[in-house]
Length: 477
Image 1 (cartoon, rainbow, N blue to C red):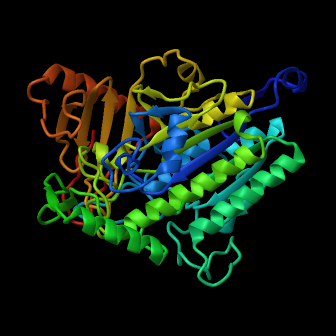
Image 2: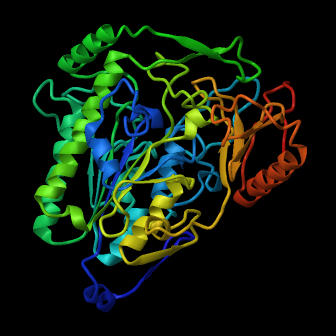
Image 3: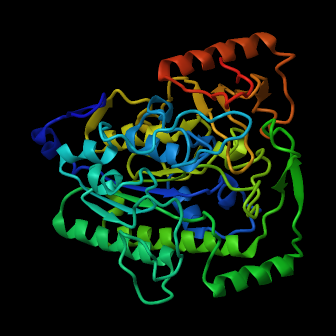
């Protein structure tokens, strides 16, 4: 077995003695903030009835996190169950923006030596298919079909579509009728995968990776018109605040959207929700829903500080590209009939890393050498052993976020700025918006959390900013 992930197969006799292996369906959205879904934010401008129904039928985690404020590291964590810091895949591929300092060295592909979730499921006879956005390597040898997936539909190097409408200019997706919308097409492809799985009788792992709601913002005109009328009827006006803590070399604060109401973004949200609903409905039609673990999450928080500022993450601070809650707090929904009770709301912090071991456990397999935790005991009503969560982003984000790291320990979160080593401390139980810095008041707690964070840097081989030629030396932990 490749790398340091070891998978133990309990054996064919064990599996035959039990119920059929559980199917696994993972939805991962792109740039979708937690507050974009109505089940998390009832006053949301957007309409997400199908994902709200999914949440009502399973467990909705209030404190779900991506492992990074940008996409590729989170996708690496989903694939491997490991902190992206371990491999150096700590930014979107291939982001290398240079400001006052040089960003940390960046691994440019999912390493071939890693054992992916798709590969780990193969010993149990799973048929694995990837549909949608991949963004884990430039070369064809880096794409899903070389990482354990038997089928790859639409997954390649690009971080966003060249076209939302056919012709798609996608090397892993045949063009459809002119004007066909990508999101609808990928839903149809996943439905075909489910039908083939039903016919084969084999367990399946389907990763449906939305290109939604990444820029460029495009949606069918009839949906855009619907939300244009809705915004006008509600009298919604754009409103912006400022995000003050940006990196030192940037001049002036960043604007941040404070109200939802952009029609084209809302249209993209409905299209994504509709697509998820079609795939989930097909599970029911095929009689597969009762034996399928479904997970829905996002690769990072909503985009609110650049590129059109399309959504608002309030009360969370900032958004994509920032290690504040707005950049890393995401929807995290798990439906697992017979295991997770319907309608439960769970506040235990969970992260992208946990999908890998949870899916393996559902398949009758166990994983060693991963950083995530199997959520099955928690989903069954037990507890997850207390743990700290970490973030490491040694890069300059397009969205204005500073290079930095963070640790969440209980309800406390410490944020560290890599440009100057400054730190801030927040009590999320009272200040989810991260506005009241308590580092000077809670000095002992801040020092303890800093020590934990720095120990994690060392344990995972974290890399940091470098100096530009003839420039100042950057801070190092």
